[in-house]
Length: 467
Image 1 (cartoon, rainbow, N blue to C red):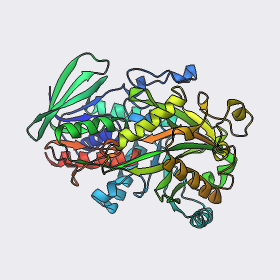
Image 2: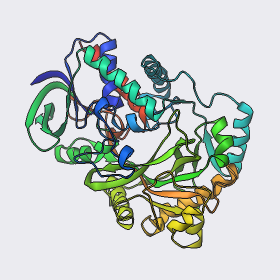
Image 3: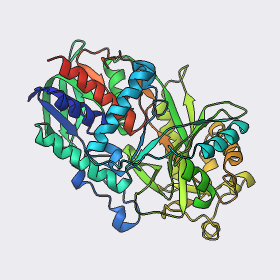
Image 4: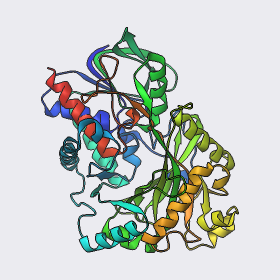
């Protein structure tokens, strides 16, 4: 099979590459290859079973058209300061202009026109003052919230648009190898995701956009074929859950508080991420049965709690340079303690040096929104440096949000972000292998829906200009 462009991964980066090529009038043939299913065929059994059943051969929450985006909280960060390091590659102004452009595309396909975090400047000022006093930095970032249930409809509309405009899609196939001739990529080798039929697609341009889930696989390809890359940052942390009443001021003023700190004694970067007012803590399964925690926020369905991630950044280069493997080991050890489930522990129990018991959770004001989380001791698996950073950051957060560091505040583990392997590329996303481009979270340059979409837009423009 021969195509002009083959895109591996139907997440936001790959999707927006195809959208922009169509909008620019490109006549190139496009094939999108996706390991999972079309968005309308993605269903998590947990909706009925109420517990994770570890779907094989992949998790329907993280895999399929639109990637993890269709089942995430569906938040679009509209500021270039949020979403990874892409602005350092393409420039801050270009990043912001492309965010504004990509945002309009989401609106075309049905995203909510309301933007969170634009109003109440006096409230923002008060929160910022408290953050400064606590040694934290508040990043002011407007948010367009699609919502978990609404995002699926938006991405379904995008999927149908691409099909109607001649983009071909192969669902249920995963890329197992690249086709290289010397230092030039000629296409990809695929196999049925259930381990059956194999095929090849030859293409002038090969785009790898496999998301966080594909970061480890891409790292393996880099080592095998000498694709220029460098170890980047890996994020290890927890998901915190508190009552909505505790976060009420921040939720109403900012919707999502993006706070950054460098707590003593290690002064590593620690940040909040993916805040979900009235949201639900969720479980995702990665390869090798690795269970990680995440959070969702629906437009209509609301809980009594707010959850958000607290992530500690780690950098490894000498002599150890396998940050993804390191984070996986942390996750595996935590999963072992939870017998394959997410661990949850009260903050007060951590400070008291004791595990949390199920009966204590049932007596607390904060009831877990992840029903199959296992009460236990996350400190038995979390590295000392990361745990110390997280504890001190939560204490600093308590100065900004009174009650955040209460005894009953829940910490779920592990929360891991696999986008540490950074591919070396120029501003046009050319790698050291001719004809090969890497986009989105798997490239190590972006974090989240919007910046991955931005990368896709710019890639699509470049490919259209080549005609």
